[in-house]
Amino acid sequence: MSVDLSALTRLGGRLAAKRRFGSVATVAMAIALIAVGGALALLPKSALHLRPVPAAAEAAAPAVPADPQLPELRRIMGSYGPVVTQEVSQDDGRLSVVLGHPYQRADVDTLAGDIGSAVTAVTQLWGTDWARAAVVAVASSPAEFAALTHATGNVSDQVSAASVSDPFVPGARPTGQRVVFSADAGRRLGADGLRDTLRHELTHVAARAVTVDGSPLWTLEGFAEYSAHRGENRTFAQLAPVLTADARAGELPAELPPDSAFAPGPANDATLAYEAGWSANAFVADQYGQHTVVELYRRMATGPKDGPAVDAALHDTLGLNQADFVTRWREWIKSRAGA
Ligand SMILES: [Zn+2]
Image 1 (cartoon, rainbow, N blue to C red):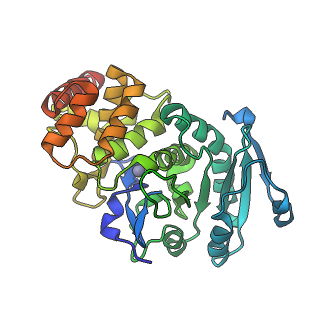
Image 2: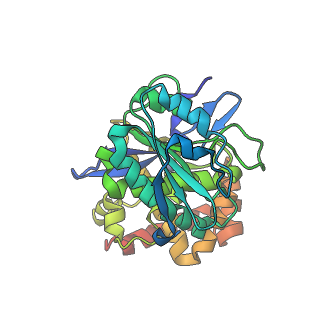
């Protein structure tokens, strides 16, 4: 099993990072984990019924069959210690599952409490063409995180979550999709950060089938961030503090953030790249409607590789070429940031 960790900045993951102004906040990070022969990408609360599931209860057949990856997941996690499971059955009969270890019970419970509304929120944006249920695993160590994401080598300790799936043929529904949280994600992100990160990763899960690896990260990550924060009662400055401070200082993005800007590292402000990606998608939603953000994602996620291809995608969706898009996006940031 091999994973290209240099590509760890390409698929759906999130990391926690210290923001420029000192407060610890979440930053989404793109991760691409390339597995053997393929890519790992990866209801209202009143409708939820949380219950711990003792092993004996698993024999009872749920309305929708349990995800076939669960026995293997339990086997892997079991080699790192006892495993606790929270099943969340939705009114539509679908079953989401959160797995972790006993000492992470609080994180497991938090995620189980969030999962129904996260599935609903992602479905409201993306539509019904995805599994509409989730498997979430909380790792107990970097080694277990790597095992659960098929990663080899050192995974950046800034990565707090990733979404993965089995290799699949484009057009087919991916299998083996899961969201994996790192051992310290709960401590670093807090309950609100876990909720946002879950929605971010579930967006990658939902969109995986139509997402070509190598598509622009401002689209893949920006869309997942837009989805994570959609409907939150937070201001532009709260959602994009670095971008806001820059704009108020007269610095507006000169271009859409390149993929390299999303890599975490001391010399790189990945926070700004994620905020810029979020803002590009939020701009489209604000000016063209939510439906158009999804349309733009579907078009951009086919992996346009050069300027003319991006121009064509933007033109077909929004009627703008890239230069005009950037001009309008910058003006929008400026007005939203109060710059
Ligand atoms: Zn992501």
